[in-house]
Length: 201
Image 1 (cartoon, rainbow, N blue to C red):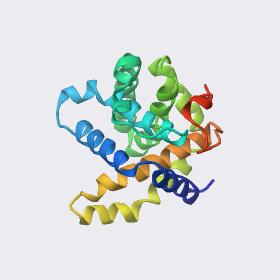
Image 2 (tube, rainbow, N blue to C red):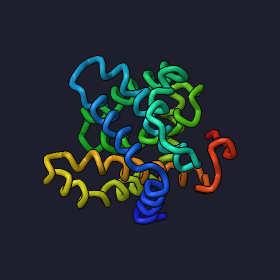
Image 3 (cartoon, helix red, strand yellow):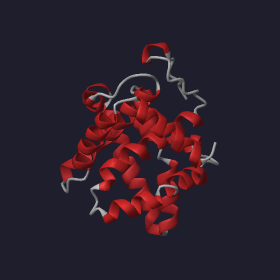
Image 4 (cartoon, rainbow, N blue to C red):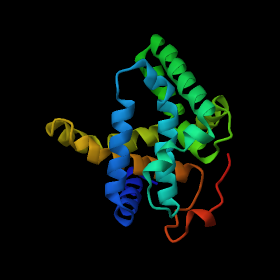
């Protein structure tokens, strides 16, 4: 599928569910992960996985809930912490060579948070390896999807950044649709979360 297809799926899901709850969840997520503090390193992994979990459940038929974003702190905190730290270290080391290798690696590990959201018992490093496998031949597709939001990003800048709080739910939903396409899960909005068997990689 093309970037336009993922954007359409994202917008359809956001319209069907409670968009303002997604806005609130993304607002909390951006503010929490954007804080300039060393302690952020110890919470960002769990928050990223929890943020992804909200969108995965929404696509699978469940309404968004703020408390879902904090679920990984209780179910998979160590795994999310390992994944966050290793991703930061590996991308940083690759970036020391040149900027481009670091960007490529960041795309390679980009599905780690979704994999951990679907498989909280999975080791953080194993989730990263599975993300690398999923993204073989798909990094350019994800780049094109993200680049397709460039116009919205410029508009958000013109609003002194306020627009990004509205853009983040749209972009995250589109990326979630991209992940579901990678694992070949059909999006059926008539199903509930209990009726869907999570696909383990």
